[in-house]
Length: 290
Image 1 (tube, rainbow, N blue to C red):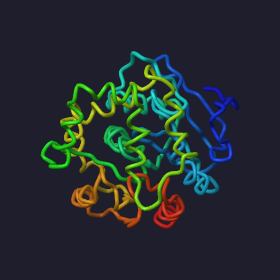
Image 2 (spheres, rainbow, N blue to C red):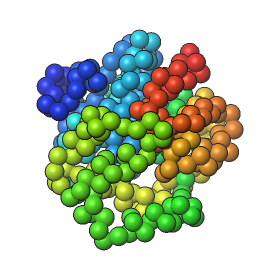
Image 3 (tube, rainbow, N blue to C red):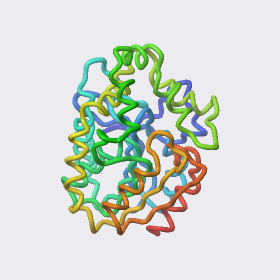
């Protein structure tokens, strides 16, 4: 592992004032940040984001906790090989190796979007090493019978999907802005989500997450079936209630499976509460676990 101060020209160091660190995973460079001291909080992002979306929450928590946030291979400042196993289970296997290499113990997981199943898979495999779990607008079960998913799967099955993702950078340019609630993303901040995917060859990670929604539903459901192994873990569910993609019924599903969990409902937020209302997210975490 090594640290580097080099950053791409488009990255606003005022928005993201962290030292970049790198871990070698599957012969690829996996970028991460590691700041603060104390109990470890591990932030696991989804699509089409990277550790950048947790930046303000991390700045609030790092005075009290050690905050670690990796970028999955194919995202953020990590390597983006054209030919790679970008499957969701492989991202989780990489996360497991990352945790082991850093020697993280008694982790609090902070999981968003695809980070949910990726991080929950680790928690189910290593429940003794997970102290607490924070879930932000995510899922952990099959959506095959969800009417919204059935409609969306028509897009996922389209032969134009690779063109949309590789040529138009569809996920960060179009889907991400539409996922916000009342507070809209600025052009300056949106740039930090589009620029990591510089060209078509570097956009296969985002495309693979879209395909995961078609191909990994049984894997998601298998994780849900094992949820009792985590029934005693303190769990906080932070939900943007104006999310057009992972809607409020997903929150209720989590509460049905983890009835001891606490829910914080952010009425004006969409899919990215940590970007839209980072202060509320950080306060919720500090008050619940503090």
